[in-house]
Image (cartoon, rainbow, N blue to C red; front, side, top):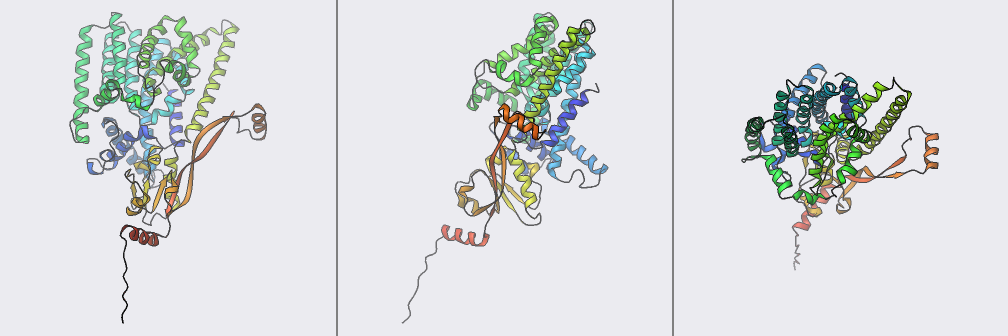
Length: 523
């Protein structure tokens, strides 16, 4: 559907205006860089030095890295060198755009399924409602494991929805659903497998899917998935490994994810879904009450969310796969109202109300984006350093933990003549001197007296609600200050340069290797 291009336009806009990434995306982004630049030279891969808490699969980064290499090569052929792809940070944007394009294909597949079951108006409404949301489009180009799983989940769910509209071919659609969700669950994210288990159980209880089909298709798809992920990941990790199996054991069995915080049972329904769906949340509730078809597609999603609510640790990305289902339910309401408005002016008023709510949702999403793009000081600081220093001068820069967690990636290491370090074992200021760093990007400048601050990078701290009087005054003076909140920025990172390198080095050597000088008196 052509209108899905609007979703990709927003994905691309978010990507270009906010090109940096955070710690959750770090492994897949670094791995994509390494596949693109180093291929099989594992000694230069980032994950062997910084493996993370649990191992992740290389299947997604390998495919994305290869597609990115092709895209970059074609761009360099089409456009003179340096005008489009002049730096590795531009390659990062290309990689994210490629991932966003793949997710868009999944969204298009889902929109076609919505059209099949609910009609063209509902499919158009689905895309428009999706564009009023923030999270799913903002993160569609970001290298989360969940994002890599999303196209498979969308395609599997699309087949499931289409199976409800087709009586003759529904068995074939359900088999495809099993295949796509099995691959997504075993290779990328185990929660996709949980969603599959719920869907399969619902279809079996409804007598639309036999035990034989479930077992044969599930086992075959699982075997193919393991045959894909285990050899590839064992090669990259240098030991026999099924990464997502390790992640499942770590999070679900050992419940180690609770160390990152816990929330009450109702958090997904009260806190997360309203923010994820915005206007689509109340519309989907109306659809659930009034339409049996909607109850049929929403019930598995609600069971899935309730199941994950039992886990103490909760994150919005664990339930991201249900967002298109809720949005499709909301779209069915919009489609019905748009059809009935010709019969009564009341429905015209209702439709205007829905459109107004969509506008407010879009404004809320825009505010979320304005705030979110200020959350990446590490990426900005590293990029600024390249602009501050002579590219031909030798530079050795250390990036501290906060810098690496908030946007500094291998793609951001743009100068091949410079050296970059993320060593986390330095304990004293002398350790930094011993390594010979000329520059630091750090959140703690006070422990580096030998270095001078040459740049300060600000980042998001909090929002402050404006009073009605202040808001109206600001809006009257500057129309672009229409946000009802002030976004408060505070210093997050400091870029520092070593002062008087030779003198500092001599003083350091004297501290480390004190010299006792004797004097003789000659008579």
